[in-house]
Image 1 (cartoon, helix red, strand yellow):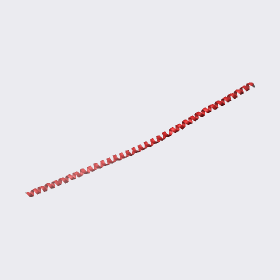
Image 2 (cartoon, one colour; image 1 turned 135 degrees about the horizontal axis):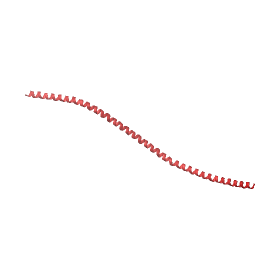
Image 3 (cartoon, helix red, strand yellow; image 1 turned 30 degrees about the vertical axis):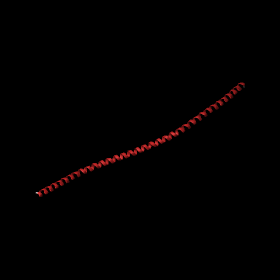
Image 4 (cartoon, one colour; image 1 turned 60 degrees about the horizontal axis):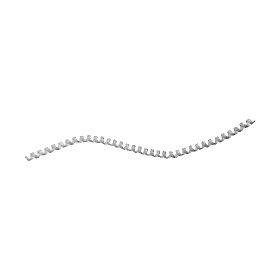
Length: 126
């Protein structure tokens, strides 16, 4: 039994060493977990302002895009109005051309009437 007692003592000593090793190893794991928790907390604290800034940038970009769309719509409306006015101007110019022909005829008739009246007056003087 002496051999069994020796093995038993060795077994108890190795179990005690194993318990001490497990305690030390668990302490290191606990410290690493605590360090990881602190790093994650710090990362979250640093990420929140970045996300807030990103939200602000997104809001401003959305505002700029909306304003650009409004300016584009105004420009599009202005171009359409200009086209409509140009089309109306072209139509009015055709009407004026027709009116100018009538006006020319009226002027010619007036000039003819003035010429006849000048002839009649000159004829009466003689």
